[in-house]
Structures are given as C-alpha cells and as structure tokens.
Image (cartoon, helix red, strand yellow):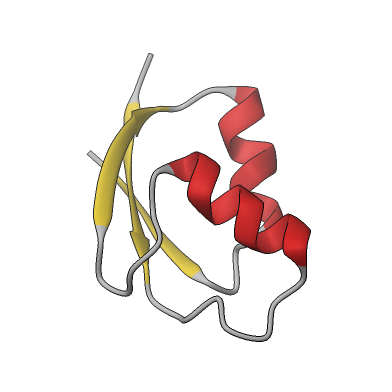
Length: 59
C-alpha cells in the first residue's frame, strides 16, 4: 500500500468530541505534528472527517 504523511495544521480546541477523538486516533494532537501511515479506506474516512484540521501528502 502507498504511504501518506498527515500533518495537523489547526488546533482541536472548541471542536466536537468526535473530531478530537479522530485526531487522537490518527496519532496527532499537537499542531505541526506529522505521522506517516499506510493509505487504507478506513484512514481516508478518518481524514475526511477532520480534513479542515490536517494536511495530507503522498510519500
């Protein structure tokens, strides 16, 4: 599978609980933190829920 790099670019303060939980599940939590993950359909669904808070790049 292809890998993608996910970077949190906005804060989760004043966000709904489900968005905060999704950011935590992605392994993020602080602005400018970056994680590298396998690109799966489940991960794409999580990214779409918090697309306004993260930046996604192909590796």
